[in-house]
Length: 141
Image 1 (tube, helix red, strand yellow):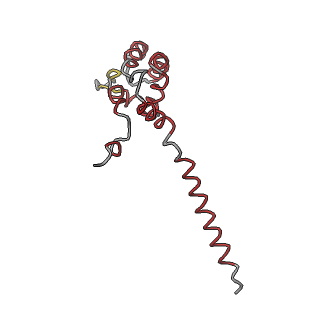
Image 2: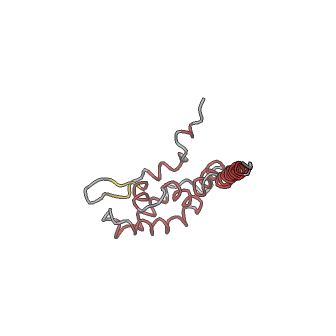
């Protein structure tokens, strides 16, 4: 049976936080944390992973700062501190499982080891290309 994380590589423990409402926009539509972070130009899962690794107490002021920057929900202008406090309680506990810590670290920093592996493969391909190009032009005719 296929690994369920293939279809959804994001930690499911983040869902409750990311799907929580931060308020209504000017058109009366509910805006979620996921939407807020995306509209701020942030990767919602990466930002959530970083908040989780900070812990709820340290995450609250950071979340408050992010919400204060968000202008699409008028109520956040004066109430971002309370909303940040409430939302920080939806983050997974500080005593989170080893799997969630690994997932958060992976989301926050990318897949472990893939950056170096990609560069190594590209370097090998480049060297092979150079060998075939230089080796072929020295045939003497």
